[in-house]
Length: 363
Ligand SMILES: [Fe+2]
Image (tube, rainbow, N blue to C red; front, side, top):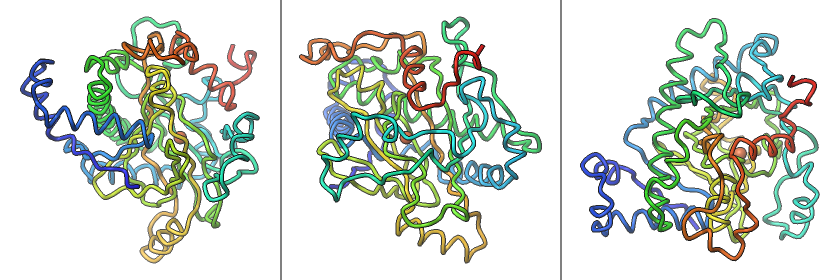
């Protein structure tokens, strides 16, 4: 099974001319494109999109800067570490983030029952990857969840940092918003059912850096089998492959992102809003044959051996309520998704994966 590539251009063009729900209803081509978006998210937990506003050059400018940053000595990078803010801004060093499969007993049992060929890699400990968190977009003027909405951290000696992060981050959020609108239409909801809840959400541009020089052995797990706790995640193309996803039918699949395309993945918040009609996509990042091939090419060309992912986590606003929307509230399993503030939900999830400091540390 292949993940289809959806070109967002026709929908963008339509939206720039009309915001009328009736016009969209009458456009059968766009309606079927929206259905393809929601169906693909349901079946695969992933989607490849082409957004004319996000060019391969933009992606490269971002990757170049992040490679330069991750190449800096550990002592330098640790100046941008903010454990007291739950690592939600600044850098998270390698060895901090714990894959859920390592701590979640229920998940471990599920993994043991999976057929051998689709079982995920078993990491022995925390993820050996660095990550940088950069908040994108407006913050709310008042919120009950201050710690998730803190000031950004800018490393010294990177004059283009703010511009590069903001412009790539803004473009990625814009692409998610279009997918969210199309998915809402495809699911039979109001087209702004998701985007109205994303407004002023704590969206995070969160590129990871994995040092393939140190950790480039076949099978090394950079991000153990897990789901994302946010609404939708978007990635630009990485220079080193290695992402595996699990389809809803349990099949494991290595993702190939074509040049100029972006990858979208479903997170736990869209599962909540759709009462499980769309579930959070499971995934892992590990060194594969294709990663090693790309490493050889990079070494020959004297390029960086840091694997940078240009990931952005699109969130529901912290003070907005997560609950099954529209007709999903009638689902027989809607009670599995009780109403809860998105900020409260995120705090609960972070506590499990070890990113949240103890109460003493936080105060
Ligand atoms: Fe993830």
